[in-house]
Length: 144
Image 1 (tube, rainbow, N blue to C red):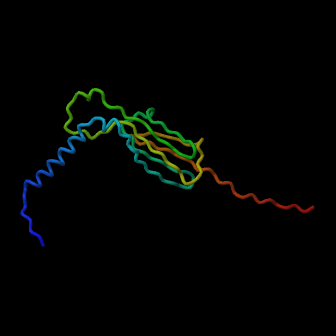
Image 2: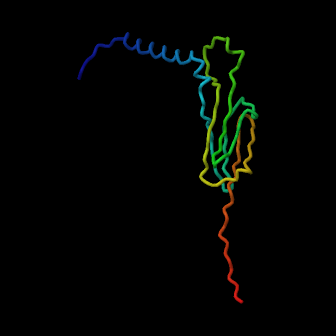
Image 3: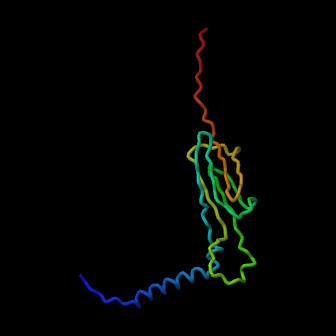
C-alpha cells in the first residue's frame, strides 16, 4: 500500500481545467450551427401498420421534409437560429438549432402511397401501413 500526501491544489487544477474546456465548447457558436442532430423517435407496430412518433416542438410542420425512397423513410428539417439573440451574452444556452434528421428501414414491406403524417402539440406521427401479403391461391383441378 502506498500513502500519498493529499494536495487540494491538484484537485482544484483538474476542476479548473475541466471548467475551461466546457467554457470553450459553449463559446463556439459553430458547434450549434454545424450539428446535425439525430431525431429521437418511437416506432411501434400493430397488425396493420407501423407508427412512428417524433418530438419536434416549436417547429413549423411545413419545415419538416418526409420522404420514402428505396424502402427507407427519411425525416429531416432545420431549426433556424433566433436572429435577435445573436448579440446577447448567454449565461446558459441549451436550446439547439441546426439541421436534424433520421432514416428508418422497416422489417416488412410497407405501402409507400398510403403513408400519412399528422402533427399535434409538437409530436409528429406517421402511420406507415404494411402491404397486405398475398395469400397462396389454390387452383382447383376440374375433371371433364
